[in-house]
Length: 187
Ligand code: M6P
Ligand code: ZN
Image (cartoon, rainbow, N blue to C red; front, top):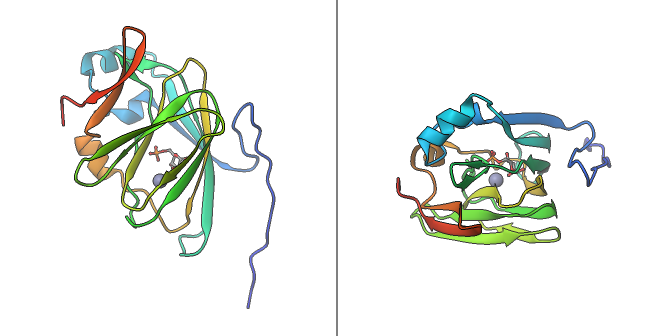
């Protein structure tokens, strides 16, 4: 039997950076069609801001193993809709996930394949359990970076297709200075 080598890595709580992790950057231009207000999207595209960065430590896609990643989700809005991650189901749909909020303010939008949605507010210390089969997207509702750690099975995979086409049944917007979760007019 050949055993994998255990390791420890350092996560910087301030920046969300995990040392030696693989870094992924998602800019606004990577998210065409994701935000409801297309005019506001096109306008902001001239600046093409970074929406979020992911620092991932991933293993081979085998069952039993675990991946982990931090996400640094920047504050901002496209129209009235808060900056958010793309959101995904897992390719192996029955794989669960756990999120742990480290910094900033936000929440998670979850959805079943039938379009039943939930909103879970998150602040530092909040642990969110993402059950099997639920799509999940995180949203920054504050004015500083929203940073969290996620742990997920190494063979979960990311299925972006359904969300890219249809979005979530709910959107999270600012209305009169309040965070409002409302029906997605494009759903
Ligand atoms: C978390 C995890 C990652 C995911 C990232 C960004 O860190 O769930 O697997 O990649 O958030 O979310 P998305 O892939 O939906 O853009
Ligand atoms: Zn996931």
